Image 1 (spheres, rainbow, N blue to C red):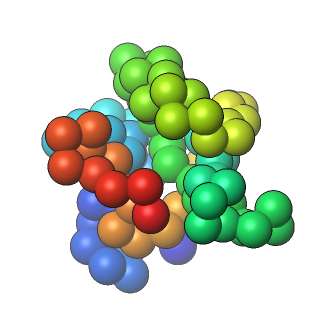
Image 2: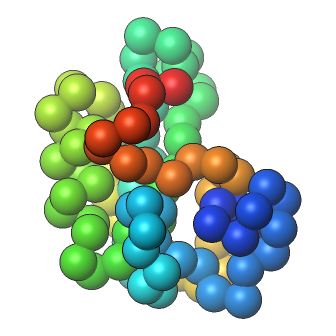
Length: 93
């Protein structure tokens, strides 16, 4: 199940970009963690379309968060519900 913009726990017909307001298909998977609150074995996942992959990577990199970007496959399934990034209102959690 893919969570995110489809509502908490809701399934999406297509995995979409995690950038606030974007409804484009995901092409990239961004694994990241905030070392101040996440242990080394816990990470978060955002999805990104072609247009927003660099924006989201730079958003996380500017905060010195460990980030790994790799292609997203439709068979991937671990995006946390409610993890939509928005630089204007998003906290570090």
